[in-house]
Amino acid sequence: MVVGLAATLAAAASMAQVVVPTKDPQHPRIRYEDSLLSLNDRCMVRGGTLNSVFRPVYINGRPVGFC
Image (cartoon, rainbow, N blue to C red; front, side, top):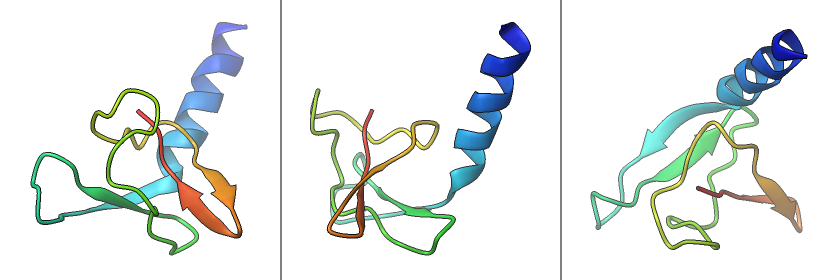
């Protein structure tokens, strides 16, 4: 169980490759492994910084990141 969780987290972490700065340095966007840039620069749930560990949700083929 722990090994499966570690593998899942490692795979998710490998999805995000680049943090792209924005006008607000506290809230960068993320460029994912598929070369798509996150639509948002803040978490839709808490309003905080995006976390590259969590996989994005794709809406109309564009990634939306979460915290």
